[in-house]
Image 1 (cartoon, rainbow, N blue to C red):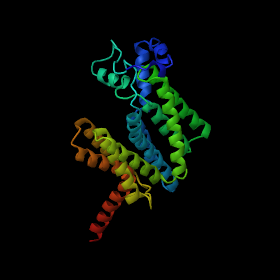
Image 2 (cartoon, rainbow, N blue to C red):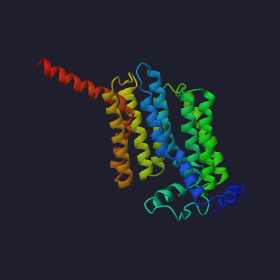
Image 3 (tube, helix red, strand yellow):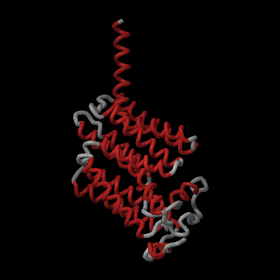
Image 4 (tube, rainbow, N blue to C red):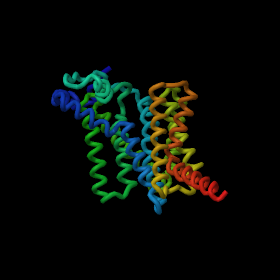
Amino acid sequence: MAQPGRGLGVPDALGGLFDEVGVVVLAALTQLGDVWFMSVLAGGLYLASTRPGNPLARRRGAFVLALPIVYVVTVPALKGVFALPRPPDAGVAATISWLPSLLTPVFENAATAEGYGFPSGHALGTTLVWGGVALATDYRTWRFRLGVAGAAVVAVSFSRLALGVHYLVDVIAGVAIGAVLLLALYWFADRGTDPGRALLVAVAIGLVGVLNGISFDSVAAFGVAAGAWFAWYALVDRAPATPRTSAMAAVSVVTLALAGVLFLALYVSVPPTPVTAIGSAVAAAAIVAAPDLGERVVSAVSSGRDHTRTG
């Protein structure tokens, strides 16, 4: 059932403004708020925050890493509560005549959406994660970081409207909820220095999602939250590692990449529920503990070599 009142006429007004090239650009812009992109962004910043001599930066990096996890557990829960539909043609992609057939499925996936539409998950997630990056990092000035975050939120929100996958009210609500959630998490996590608290919030929300309905998405989201929270408290919280050599950093990067491959394998194969839960938890734990694993693996190998030489 269409609900044009939620759009206030904006999606209809934007629908005919863009040609084929414009629609492809919109589909690319909307990826700035997609969970895969924000996970890569947060994961990269998390690894970058492990530079030696600054454990506080590692904690703030972990806070940023927690934000896309909060995003993936929160959005399905909210959409299930409101259960409001998307615009009628949200699942229909525009025909791009010059697009190679190999890229057509990629474009269709980026330019369409299914399921409930309120609030906009992309608008909420972009506000939460990009806003969190602005709050928790110290790159250049606060105004510059806020400007970049604001530009990302505007670009993603506009792309969702222009692609016809959301109504205006969906996007406004997504931005508002994302901003409130970010500020609450930032305060609860002691200005981003206690990421374990943000991860604990993700576990609680994820558990509610599983209790509301067991599905691949809800189980995978809960597994990610639980694995990340456990790894932080069990392996990292008391003494966050700061890899001191290129070998340690390389092991950390490889660990992060392998965790990403595991996530992809789970997403493609959609295994039974127990496998989904365990696999998601292991992958998330590996990401959180990647810098610490890098330090421990290289240290263990070096100690073994030294022992062999002295023996």
